[in-house]
Image (cartoon, rainbow, N blue to C red):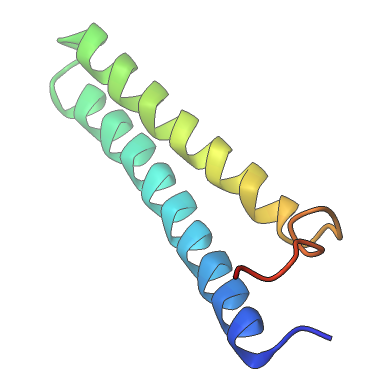
Length: 80
């Protein structure tokens, strides 16, 4: 049975990953708006911004899902 500190830190990690995912989605949305508002100018800038935001959102989503899987991270020995 995990201690209260471990459970609290796991919950905090999940909230941080969820926030990171939402920030990545926000960057994608801003890149899309920037592309449209500049009348489709500076395509490369908006593509790279959107791709970076998408990568961050995808990585955060994968890590968030992994926190629910029982695995080696939950069975680590306590730090000494």
